[in-house]
Image (cartoon, rainbow, N blue to C red):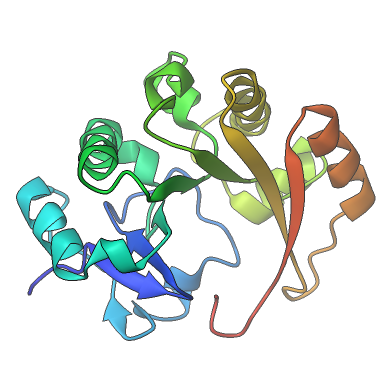
Length: 206
């Protein structure tokens, strides 16, 4: 097997669609190791083999699990059409599985349109990396490659809430000397109708 598209972590199925990302977060696990629980997530090509994704998914017997998460060594929404096709396959074949995307929330900025309605019915929840209470802090931590990433991320959260997709926004804490105002972040996130979650940094990244 040359590419690990599907891996298991903490009782959940994860799907690794790409190594590309529009952020270069200072705490990103890919900067410190090549694998997650022994699965090397660096892909040898960005040309996605969807049949192989589906085969790897089927091979791990999804009926034994409750949730599947689009999350790997890149931003999954960069493979939007492939993500939607895979999610559609999951909903048709494994309807008991809840689907989630872990994302930087820049999807609308990337595609220059509101993609959230396209996710409704295919994706049950999203977890968005909020990362900081203002643009300055966000940019220091996330190192975004696109202009207006911070405000676009917040608009994405609002659209997900509006479209009744369960939405959580996260803050990583405890990484080196990066200080984030958690209460400020929590207040902003909850005001948008999303859930707040703190993610303490772990040495192995997960």
